[in-house]
Figure 1 (cartoon, rainbow, N blue to C red):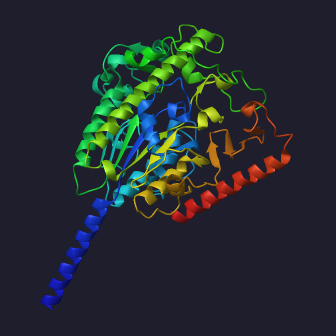
Figure 2: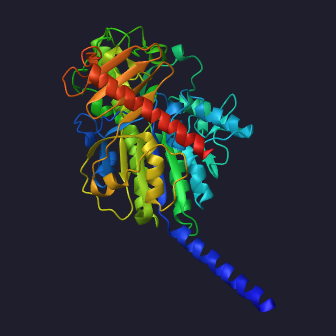
Figure 3: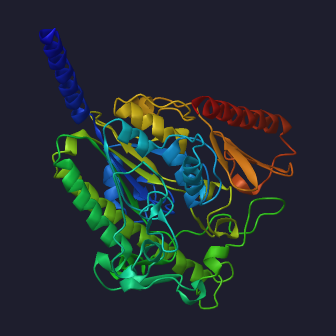
Length: 481
């Protein structure tokens, strides 16, 4: 009997060792989230933006030219990324999920939580969920109010002179904190090192965490890093503004307010900052200055990405880490007379997505299929040899990543007033009151000419697809709880 028990103990120990070895060999994940980033980069065919580090990553990866987020606002978009399901239309979506967990109500499993359950060390640095550092409270630093309970081993935000995560979120140079938007400049360029703005400190901490995780060979890691810029206000070290001071940028396409019922808005967030009494919709020179400062912020964010990627390349984890670069939504720079996000137009919903898989020699050829943010959760599960949890609504992009295979998809998005579906050729937006917008992206007019009354067959087809996909998603989610 004692021999049998001893034998069983040896077998159990051996099984645990095999499990530990297989877990340690699983690919790591480095997820880089960038706030308010348009697909306005060199690798997306733009020659007036300097983005050498993201471009280098793209040359080694699969770039998705038509990636769409689920919501044109930070919190709701990140909710879709981090849970793999639709739903949650406000910036408080993840906090609402946390409240449901507190009440023992069923909720979708989170992506970092799933990786953590499967043996990964999970760490977030910067703005990964809506609040940088992932906590609530008046200054977003209360450890008793986690935005994603049970998801992270460590969720970090080095606030430095900005005092707390809320201060860093909208911080300008050398510790300036937003108290009254009307008294904070909408853009700024100050001489100094990367660390005079919050993303420099975020990047330093990300590099430190990456170094520690990569040198711990006993456990795979899921490291998510959230870069704040180019979020408002548009502040970056002066060296990143220098290339754009006299830059000539192309004309703003479709710069007028659309007619009829749309999700247009008056750019409230942008307009409440100090603009020196200037309006970019009426002042072409000021509009150009805004766009130049946005470009400087993009180059600043790109430099931070480069530092993180260089650290990965020099680490023991270099050849065993999946890298994802994701923009949480786009941003209008005058298109449709909007300066901001929140609308259900292409400029708010389209963002960069670049994925570098382990053991796949990508040719850097972009993929033109329509894909969406909820596709990332099942994709990362497949790329790391994990079973995906029940209830995910997206499709794995692995065939597209490895073989540039066609991905037959549409993209769903929503805000508090409407829902939209993007096909390879059209966008249909359905308002709560039944109003419809239909745009044909094969035409020069794009999202300026509403064809809903002229093409009822296309409206009917896309409306049915939208309804079916939302119903299917709801059914999946219900079965998984």
